[in-house]
Image 1 (cartoon, rainbow, N blue to C red):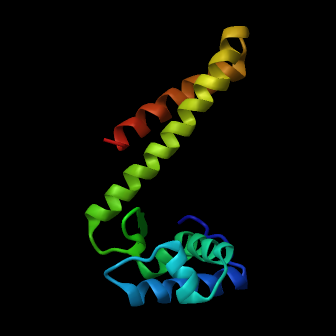
Image 2 (image 1 turned 45 degrees about the horizontal axis):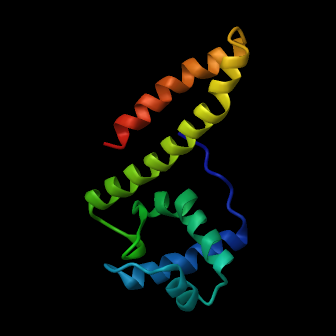
Length: 137
């Protein structure tokens, strides 16, 4: 079982406030500004609370937190919402990975084609990239 990060007391408190606000708003979501108003936290405290929910709280309560442009942050019981959010996150990761490969690793290999590290990284990341591409479909 993966080890959970230890929550700092403030992050846990912020997460609890955000979770309560989102639960009260169900089935609707709340935009960041609305969460700030509902919780009386600052933007950075709300963001910290959301991170805590994603790291710890959602697993404890078995309800994923998702974000949609039209609805904001929300707890959803609909697996289609979870899948939509997960695919968007995988697209973001794939984009970052692709830029890292094309902007750093490929030029590294072009200049030093025999570099063992670059060859290893390229071989490993090619598989990761293919997997992420499949997950975004």
